[in-house]
Amino acid sequence: MLEEFKKFALRGNVVDLAVGVVIGAAFGAIVTSLVQDVIMPAVGAITGGLDFSNYYLPLSSTVQTGLAYAEAKKQGAVIGYGQFITVALNFLIVAFVLFMVIRAMNQLQRREEVTKEDPADVKLLTEIRDLLAARR
Image (cartoon, rainbow, N blue to C red; front, side, top):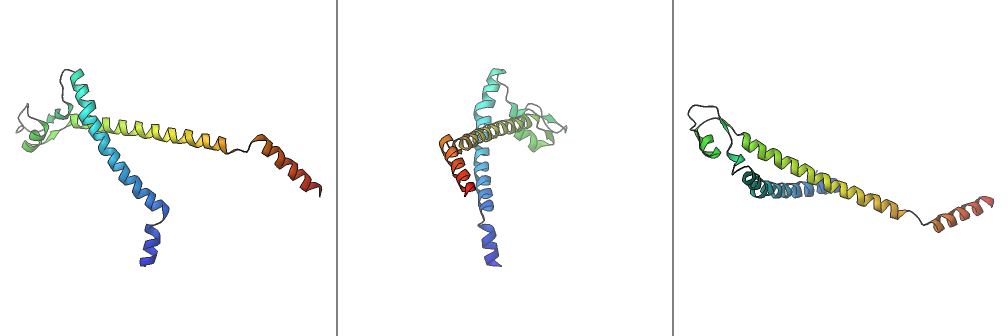
């Protein structure tokens, strides 16, 4: 059973998947930082200093207005729609970057396929060889 598990765990697909998950988590952290530390402050500056992460709707009368989102959550139920906007923006950026990476990889694969073709003289020589072999 241990040998079977070893074969399973070290198969190429499993290892590739594990590497992809680890890199994806690191990439997600980078994008989260990009959105929270670069994009959202810029959007806030453009919109007059608005901080989306602190936009919320209180669902309880015990929540005081004007508090930061984290403090409001401690006082009662709130809907943090500003936090949702930030997370949705994270998703859009991740999806766009992944689209660009996959698009670039596809273009590289197409270029490799084109360069893998035999030159015209090699094709011609192959056809001549095949014709001579067919005559015999």
